Length: 331
Ligand code: KG4
Ligand code: ZN
Image 1 (cartoon, rainbow, N blue to C red):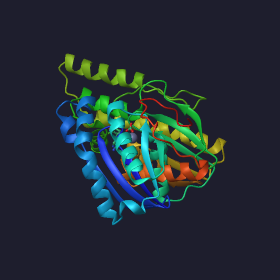
Image 2 (cartoon, rainbow, N blue to C red; image 1 turned 90 degrees about the vertical axis):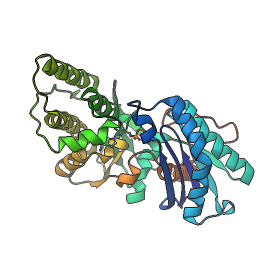
Image 3 (cartoon, rainbow, N blue to C red; image 1 turned 90 degrees about the horizontal axis):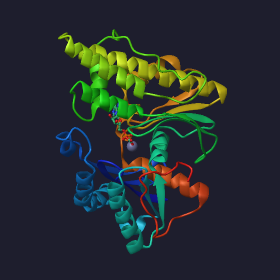
């Protein structure tokens, strides 16, 4: 089965062609990072316009790179949400137009299901599995007992991990997106700054806003006292406390649910500090992290998730398919 998939929920315009929910034949990603950098974050109105400019070209490139014609496409999968509504609508409408014009069935896919299924590109998922979702908008622990069966064990009360990374980066003037820069600097420093305890004991829930405020205050006080901030050490201190709590709760869930596999999903899955901590602390279970190219937003992951969504439910959407800024994983 050949799937053409589309992702446009934030600042990446992407189209991919995949085969049988496993093999990626092409994955074209047009990133808008350079456009948004000037503003220190994603500007929704600009993001929508950039998607409009790029989407047709990316469709054509993806088909060409995979050496596939429109007639060979069996299913279309498109991110329906969550994300920026203006951005989502460009992808959803382009996908619907392509489906209608070529008489191909279409499925709307949850963005986080895509991030989760990015792992399947590396290794076939084995159940039960525990998934740590760490993206710019989500932080969750999910139990999967089968394909497309998502049970939420816990989530963040406030900020998502990626969001916290971006805010810390902004506080110390590191630019956007902050996650990769903080990660890089953390490896050049040592965790010398005291950090608060952010472990919500006995629960799978997370909270990062206290840590964020702590860092903002710390930086503010250092500046007020005319002291020098060691940015590398601050990044290392932040990264240590974050990866610590993420891995501790993951280990607890793996044990409690006797998981056979542990996977990581979302942009922060690219974090080297987190990957190192996982390597060190998680044993006796198969550990999978997506390839770097499939960690941040891309259409390949939506194609794999769309394939399994269709295979397990046998349901398709019709031309009333819409984009949703908020939508539940199990809806
Ligand atoms: O998963 P994603 O594309 O966002 C959502 O779907 O919400 O991930 C983007 C997030 C950003 O917050 C970015 O700073 C973070 O992932 N990120 C990282 C790294 N690479 C990307 N955070 C920490 N370390 C990284 N290496
Ligand atoms: Zn994402």
